[in-house]
Structures are given as structure tokens and as C-alpha cells.
Length: 124
Image 1 (spheres, rainbow, N blue to C red):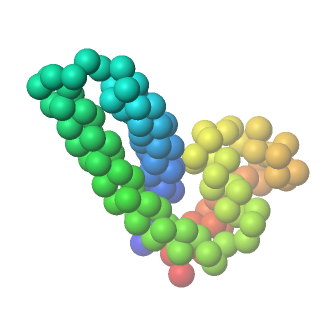
Image 2: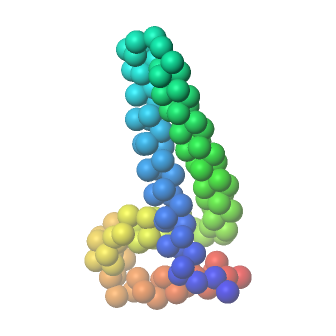
């Protein structure tokens, strides 16, 4: 049965992809500096090779995480827009029920029941 762990795992996957993409952007920016500004010599190629290997490893991690994210998104396809937004706000952005109630225009006390409804819907 699907439980809340999977929603937290989805949030982890989404946030990890964002983090790795940010790291990748920084490394690719550094790579341009390394290639253009480093003096020529044997250490230069090993530094550049190490950076390229690091970039490739990060890209591989991102692809694996994106595959996992697609599985979750397929599962979430049976949800309404507001139910998906609920998951994003609660699990990805760590919003409180009070903060969510304002954004979703729902009663704060209704949200725990809404969470259970979403979990039941996903379990079907």
C-alpha cells in the first residue's frame, strides 16, 4: 500500500534534481574558466578530465532521478491539479497546513483529511 513515505521520497527526488542541476551549472561554469585560464601542461589535462568525469557522474545521477520522478508523475496523473499542488506544497516545499490553507483556499483543519484522501486515491 502506498503511504506517506513515497510522498517524502518524491520530494527528495525533486529537490535532489534541483540541487544536482545547480551543482552541474556551477561545474560547467568552472570548466570554462579552467579550460581558458589554466596554463598549458600535464596537470591541466588531469584537472579538466576530473571536472569532466564529475560532470558526467552528476548527469548520470540526474537521469536516474528523473526516471524515478517520471514514475511518481505517472502515479500522480490520476490526481486533480489541486491534489498535485497539495503534494508540492506539503512535501516538496515543506509548507505548514496553515500556509497551505491560504494558498489552496481551504480550511486548515480539512487538510489532514485531504492528505488521507489523496493517499487512498493513489493506492487504488
